[in-house]
Length: 133
Image (tube, rainbow, N blue to C red; front, side, top):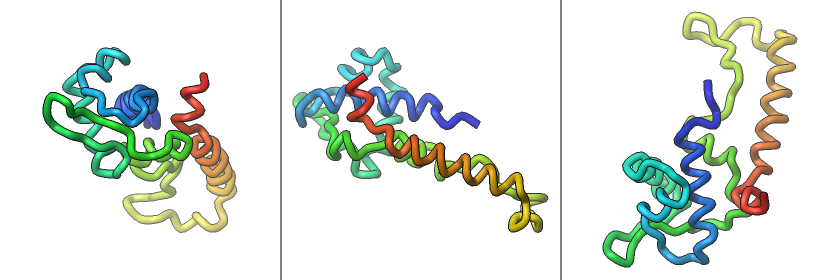
């Protein structure tokens, strides 16, 4: 399982470019060129961001894409959830049903702590913080 797959990586990189435009629309070709992302792949990656109200899209010669949310409030955890669903290390499933040992399992308790710590750190890692690197 990859949490930071190409979709998340390319989305974060595109959002970094959009964060620097000052609210002006930028073409997908310009974003792709700036980040060396395949243009057609980028177009597909941007669609879930539009659907989730993170990015606006306008067609035409003066159109393109722009960021709608504050980069300081847009976390990598949010991007992971958009492209991969809820972050979870362990499902504790057995043959398609929840494991009967879930409540008392010491391994699960430790894994849940790790999940929570990891999710907290990813939740604090924002596009704005990446811009400062």
